[in-house]
Length: 114
Ligand SMILES: [Zn+2]
Image 1 (cartoon, rainbow, N blue to C red):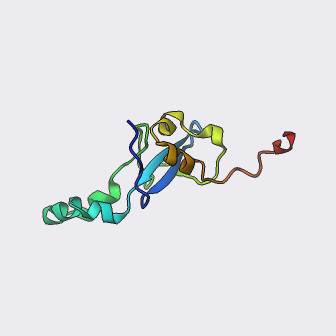
Image 2 (image 1 turned 30 degrees about the horizontal axis):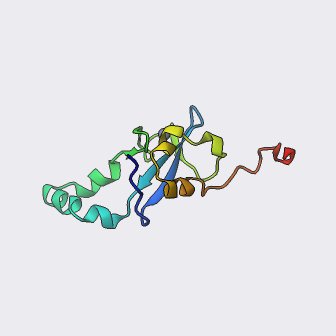
């Protein structure tokens, strides 16, 4: 079931360059992670490396590694119909509104038809 995204978390849009589909990922601010995970990993060593390479998991369960991959790219400008429906369905109503807080492409060309 849909869980609301904390208001201090960032909604990220990750475009699959192969399909053009834009997936939604949530990045939690450091404060959330600091609660327990960091302390635990600092004692084990390599904490910051582990965090840096952690995959970003989109709402529909797809893992991406934006730091390394060339197949996915963060984006802030895309048309609504490219939004991944599987991702979108996981959002609460409030978060669905946030999913549309992105820029529209300006070079669509035929926007004058309405
Ligand atoms: Zn998706």
